[in-house]
Length: 322
Length: 199
Image (cartoon, rainbow over all chains, first blue to last red; front, side, top):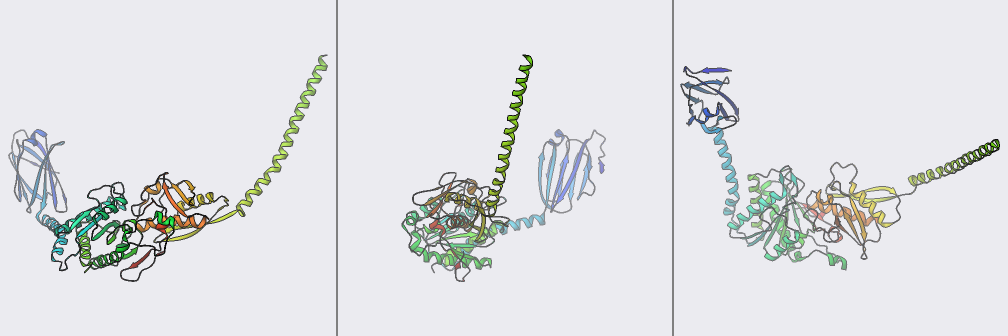
């Protein structure tokens, strides 16, 4: 430990200096008595920090500080080797002054990352604006799978219900900006029964119905409705799920193909298409598709990834019916 | 007089002890005769009185049939119980089964329409996690296992804790019997290739 003693002969207050360094961030902490710290004045410049203490002081600091310290009477000047953004905090228990010095390069990198994220957010919208093919469909219902106590597939803190809701809301925003009427089966984290979801679809009679879910695998899986071609008996008819979908089944398949192709083009991967008698699809009186996105166990759903997903679904919807 | 009385008491005591000893030997013989008979019955059950169940377990993206040999049950409802219990145990040699853990059979009933009602504990719903295919295979496996082992049932309906619930995992109805939903030959395709049956 290096002890720097100021030249003053007055009673001096002990001030200890500690620092830590991590990924371009330097944290410098000055500790002293509370009354002393509270009366300290601080001025920060881009490459210099001036600290005016109320009394003379004795400074105890670590070796090899990444900055120069010049004590003079009650004033301490810290000369930084590089310019950076300085954040200052006055904290208590114990009383201390904290300076976070972020190198400008790192700061720039972070700003660039943020810009990229913002760009990604807008990417879908911009692509939509550039989209040469007009979207013929006018009314959409987008269903965010699961919700409330039904988490769907989970991986750590990430759950299917949150991913589907986030994508549904973003898609709704994008389509609304293209003057499309969009209805969501849920706008918040709440449980909605299958019957209520189906009722909403059939009330709104949309041109396109999309249900968003997650798969257990790393694959994209697109589901189309499925009906038993053979006749069924009385009991089965009695309990049978609604078959409003029958007259839309070919359109549903076409919608699945369009969105599937757009996903393949965006992600350069094969998708799986399945036909299954899912109540949500079989009972929907509209061209319908249920999209299972790769499990959160295999895909990171950050802003960029979500923008790519929204973009591909949007493109799929745009080419459907052309 | 005293000697006579003493002699009578000793005689009665000897008669009593003789009776006790005789009774002990008699019952010992009876029990020792019965034991080998019990053992013979048990041995017979272990070696001959067994029957097979065919259980359809969801494994990956299809159902896998496993045969389970159990002590014979003559009553159909007991066979159904054994089928569901074996199904809930999950497939052999599979580390992570999609069958919800700790799920238990609470009851089985058959109505006049020959629909078999399977009442399962809440763990069957609570511990389920999966996509549409996982849910489909879980329900189809249960249905196929029951209809292939139990004669004279038309359909299967699942209750959770004695109540109807709308859905198990948010993809399929549990409000209706399973047959109409799970007996479809579901198909799948990769990209633009032709669809092929999945199960």
